[in-house]
Image 1: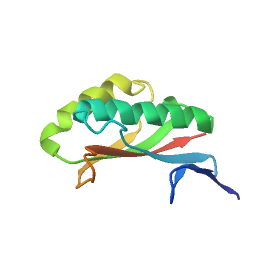
Image 2: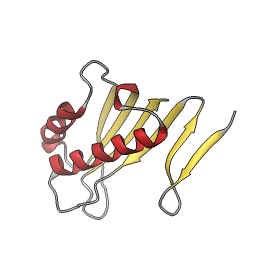
Image 3: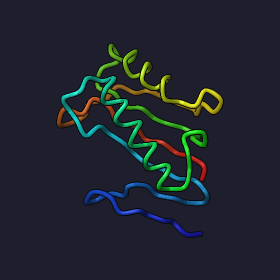
Image 4: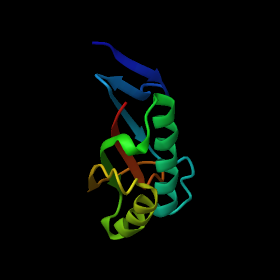
Length: 113
């Protein structure tokens, strides 16, 4: 079986496909935005990567959301609920972590092709 890696930033891929599953990670480009704004940006990036990979958010299998402060989780949740396909909600975990450079969120997602 072939692993397909689509080049991205130095040292990592935009997305990786293996066995009919596409995996990706997204953050926000505008680090001056609040958590809701950064979440919306990261989700828009996931949308674009899914389209490029030949998939769609309705085919998401799971997502792990890393945020810097659980006290602000509701802001992420508002953006997530406005974005997620209500008929095809993936598994999702949310974890508090330290992120660098003003990044408030990082989302790792997997979707069926």
